[in-house]
Image (spheres, rainbow, N blue to C red):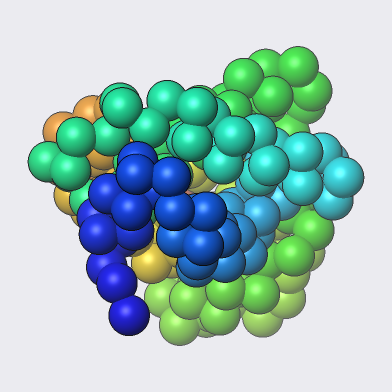
Length: 172
């Protein structure tokens, strides 16, 4: 099995099977990520496909100095942010991963409460929480995706959780 950078190099040399392998490796997680930002599955699928289209179209933009996963999520993030500017925030449709992770941290009991708690956060905090607990990205990867330094990424997650805990206490 090839690592991401080896697959990228094969794709640059015209290996279509390497491209298929890369898509197979990341498609479902990018789709899940896009669904958290969209009002419909169809729009999330469009954004996921556009993410891979832009990846392959601008493959020269990836120089291998950063982790590929963070690079791919950065593309998806930019597309999702652009899309989110067009429509208001909607509750998450399929948030099993983030529900599980936040359950452990916040002892949240249901999806509606997670949606509510995420809704009280700033867009940057919500994004950091989703990337950290929904996609299990490291703080370094979150920083790359969000275009900030690692301390800012950590701060957004920490403050987001603090706000969620406070809101949860006030709601009970």
